[in-house]
Amino acid sequence: MTTVDLPLLPLGRGTDPAAERGVECPGDLPSPSDPDLVARARAAKEALGDRVFVLGHHYQRDEVIAFADVTGDSFKLARDAAARPDAEYIVFCGVHFMAESADILTTSAQQVILPDLAAGCSMADMARLAQVEDAWDALADAGVVDQVVPVTYMNSSADIKAFCGRNGGVVCTSSNAEVALDWAFAQKDDAKILFLPDQHLGRNTAVLELGLSLEDCVVWNPFKPNGGLTAEELRNARMILWKGHCSVHGRFSPAVVDELRATIPDVQILVHPECQHDVVTRADLVGSTEFIIRTIEAAPAGSKWAIGTELNLVKRLAQAHPDKSISFLDKTVCYCSTMNRIDLPHLVWALESLVDGTVVNQITVDPETERWALVALERMLALPGRTAPKP
Figure 1 (tube, helix red, strand yellow):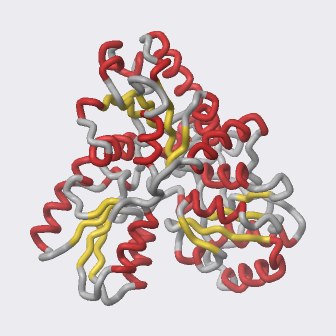
Figure 2: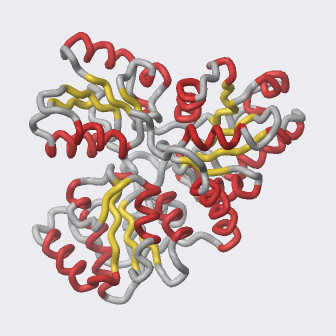
């Protein structure tokens, strides 16, 4: 089930445990006001010792990051988990697709736990397998499917990664999207790419890195017949972009970029490639989460920055670098709501449950899906060339 499948309930009037992920915990979830939460988390983690490995995505709350053994982006964390085969339990403080990737890359003896099952990803949920299979059939009807290579962003469900694996495609990250698209275009004569699920990363990479035009890109809307596209538009397109986006990065606007440049002299705009094309083209630097962190770390004292990415990370960077002026590229608060589902009470509950011998919220990927998703991931790992964005 994905979050888009969930029934709507009147605000503040009940829950539906049979349909909603994460609304109940099989045990007592500590109160957020419990003054002993930090001590309880520390005690549970110490009791588990090397049996547990806690991963913290950069967009997590500070209270959760404090207990992470490693921090990073989604793929780095999955690889970090795979590098710790002796850890029985991988507690992934991130979102659902990230925990799936960790389960795919770790051994069958390891168990991956997501502290709150409601921590999904709206972008990943915008491309469901049935929708993608329908699109593939429509591409066949249009006579172009033999030219199409599917490429999915890491921020996608395991079954979408498996779809790409079965159909000669590949996974990419925001760091190596250019290399992945180069590879995909080289796979077939007159190749076209079906890029899932983030249209902005696909468009920005194709146009700004590979030199394609905006006219080479069309957007497939899964809620319209034939994606809202004619057979001629599909034949002429080189990039077929899925109509998906990040709810955080999609908020940043070119108007705010222009306003900040007018009000903060010498400000440098640093954004993630999931931002809209008009924002990215106005930025000074564009790159992955890890690139953003490295850029700020290397920046000289006194430099001024406005950063377009998730607010938890921007705040953490500002606190870690008081010698630099760091602003958020939005006028309003912009946390990732699903990332913020993982809080200290859920982490304490997950860790204490493990201490008691109970594995909660285990994330598992079925063997067939895992097999084909791993094919797409291994193709990515075998990609030639650089794996980080250019400065």
